[in-house]
Image (cartoon, rainbow, N blue to C red):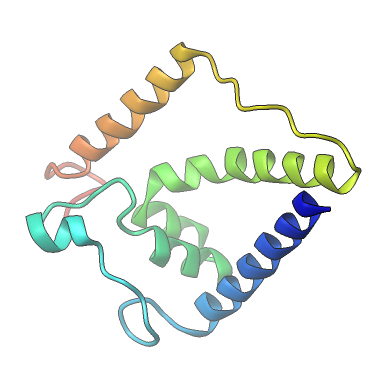
Length: 129
C-alpha cells in the first residue's frame, strides 16, 4: 500500500508540475529556481536548460528542446521506461527489483555526463552562446 501511494503521489506531482510548466515559461513568467552552479561559476552544468527543454517538449517543440539540453532529450526514454516499469510493478502488487546496474554501466554513465559537462562549456556547436 505504501509503494502504491508513493507512485500515485509522484505521478500527481509530475502532472501538477507539467501543468505549471506548460502555463509559465521559464525565465519569463512564473517562479523557477536558478542554477546555483551557473550563478557562482558562470559555466553551465549538465542539467542547465532542462526546465526550458521540458517547457518546449510540453508545447511540442522537440528540436528546440534538443538544442537546450541534448543529453536530457536522449535520457528521457530511458527515464520514462524505468519509471513506467516501476509503476506497473507496484500497481500490480509486486515488489520492484533492487537497482543493480553493473559497475561498467555506472562508469559509462558517469563518463558520458562528465564529457557532456565539459563539452557544453566549449565554443563548439551546438553549445555556442
